Length: 175
Image (cartoon, rainbow, N blue to C red; front, side):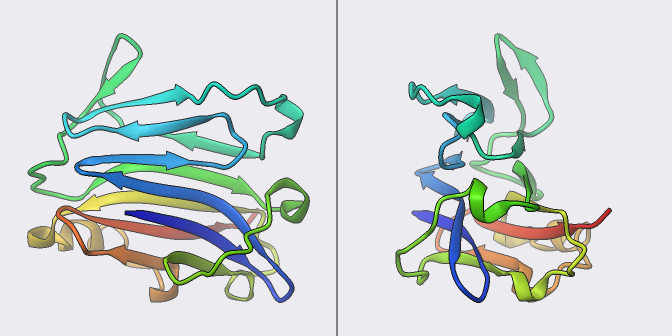
């Protein structure tokens, strides 16, 4: 399963992120970053270099963070996602959007399997967009909903095809 996160305005779509699920592993990719974050079935999470030589000036302006946990040999160990009791954050990416049309590649595919965030739903003063990816167990969805009561439905994408479910939400940031 792959979910692409796309920012859409009146004239074009921009490709921000791809969230891919392989069995019980979750991988978060930002195009042209040169690295991705993965969280494995065991609960181990780490950043991996994709082996692409990308000049820093060509990388998008994004901050990407993984989950909290115990750090050991360059990996973070947190709760395994196989049998979660509560919702667990997998990844947070914060995108600067001041010059977003120059910083991110255009998305020209169909948006049928995408989480589309429309700029018309963001305040004009928005300077950044935070995207979070969570593993949410069907038996305890309230563990996510309780912590995130202010998310409008159009800013939340739920992929409920597997257990735990993958939920992705967007939150605008203003100065």
